[in-house]
Image (cartoon, rainbow, N blue to C red; front, side):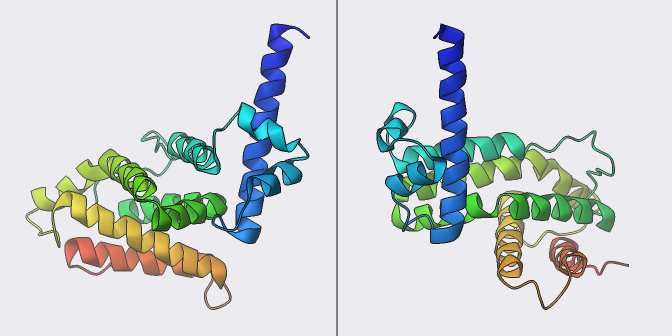
Length: 202
């Protein structure tokens, strides 16, 4: 086997382990998942796991890095607006966050579960959230530049927005029978917009 073939095989196995981990986390929860559960789901030998990850925690950190790469907001995307005095700008970001949470629900839940039992992971997850908030912190300056008052500092206001959206999206995914996805996104947009600006969505 050539060096290129070995690298391709290793990359394939790593991807299979990650995909399997997400499926097992969704079914059993992160805390109840064993490494052998992941390798069995991936159809790989138990020992192969350690060729790629030192521990279940390291695998989750790799999934977190994947999330960070996937969560980058491209300001050139259709519909993107930075001015958070405009409800449409808030709505666009709420929808992006909602879709991201829905598409990565198993990993997001695993991260929160890991943070509950590990101070190191709690700090890692907090840094991840802070980095995501930093990407759009300038959007809130439109509110203060308009002479409107935020409920707290820019960073704290964004942290509250992220926690609210995260918790609400998770609750909706557990029981989506009460309202449609569009209704949920609109309600969340109105709530966050009023929290940021003290004004109702017109």
